[in-house]
Image (cartoon, rainbow, N blue to C red):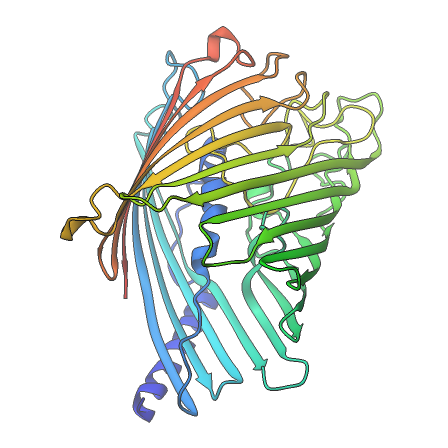
Length: 480
């Protein structure tokens, strides 16, 4: 690594940081629709783990690396409102996503990571006043952090400061890219400790979409503590505490009679397998949520209420030793609901009406299907996932993976709502979904993936909105 290359990497990193701070690219004034926000929210948070890039091996005093990737994604939606008679507000969108990153290392102890994001979205909005609309987002700072690592100390130190990817447990209670400080250490590679404090980013969408200006109002503070123990043979046991404080205006001027303040604490326990050589992997996580929220203004009992909610997630993943490399995964997930809530996210016009708020709400992600893609609230989800490599013996097909997922959805409280607000009937049967997927690694740095899902509504949907929902996704990705 030459000094000239290190100097160039440093200059590019500073340029990325300057451009992001100035928001030097114009942005469209056309906002994304609420419906589209809901459609892509879970998908976006599920893919956050892709933002984590492991540092390269450090062999010299100074080292630097530049890189990036480009995603071109096409999404097609059919009958997202479960009503074939009405035209979808958003029938398709085409999303272009460019990331450029730079990492500078000094010895094995210090590193600086910067990444810039710029995206463009074009969508069909012919059901509204115009046929098409477009949005530019960026360039802006996607990630920027400094890491200090002292692994040769008696108690190792790993400190990260800046905009980074943070999570607890399996990432359901909390996982996001936020500004924060994270501290990690371990004792004899058996006991692991992680703690962090973070704040939500500017112009981040609020999970409560009934909040005025929800797409620019999400001022929250998070504090997490996680402890893991690997002394049990081939297992890791862990526990965590997450505290979330809502710093948004208690009574916004737009709705002075309604408070949206949502403060929550999460207590989690988990167990997962820890044997890379085993064909069987398993996991279990249970989370208790407490805190306080406010009832809807439609309630006769308008006041702050206690949160009392639960979540459980467990699963098995088994790889069979036979041709085509089949893999089978079984998963169950449950999150409690509230019988008098018609919305699992909003406070106003669908929130809690009386009594404790027993709806589980979270700030992370959980994969729940392609077409319905609901948040894990007031719901039981049963999943079967089968994956195989159909062309493993052919030269061109060694990197092709195909699969099928089947989901069965049930309500926790039959009178309560779910993330899809069309499920208005007091019935436990939400429906079922079949998903198909295809991944192909064409080259070392070129990837192509396709997904298709179809959701079959159950008896929780009225006859006027019980048509099948279909979803198609295709992504072409280049890394460099």
